[in-house]
Image (cartoon, rainbow, N blue to C red):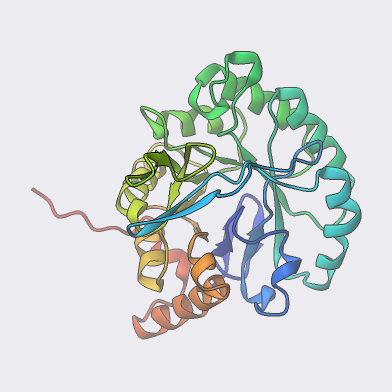
Length: 304
């Protein structure tokens, strides 16, 4: 079940996704963390962020909307209080999701994390609005992404994974920019911008009006984007978007993913990531797959 990803060896290709697994340590009493290949922390910023006011999660058909507002404790408290207990689980790689509203904020967070022990890699959340570029997300503007990646690559002492936004014309093109700028891997997809309205009150159900759509509803689109991206870049791709079963994970691997992240499923079942890791092992055994890595990119497309 081992896979190689951005210079790391993971004991499983199943990773718990950012924003759905807290800081990891909150799950230690219900999830066997070392059965996961890794987990990604919720986004860490330079200063603490309180996030949006409630309601900030809304159930939708086959999914959910969230507008949490990137709530987190800030990099200093993360290093001092959240990170040390994770040393009890050395086999489960800790990947820190990093974000900022300016390039300098990203770099400041990375530089503070560089000397902290127990971190395997950084996942750059480039779906944040760049306040110096009129509010357009870093991941939606080629020039902004290229500049951010150049600065981050120079500053980072660890592998860089870029979490790509699907709210673009061509996610494969943005993946190429990330790869050419030094990314060690890309992860996709982040949530799709969406909204929900209460017909009775005639008001949006989220206080932020819009939010990010995730869950099984987005899986077919996410799968297509992973397929296109894996064919466009030579670096590893981490697939995510509506994965709730071992078969879902296999589909993403066949489409070209080296590993998968499990997110929204953890809201319905806090043990979802561990369950999927075990389920994927069982699936491989029952299908005679000796190495899970052999599934990556093994999609068979009929000749026309």
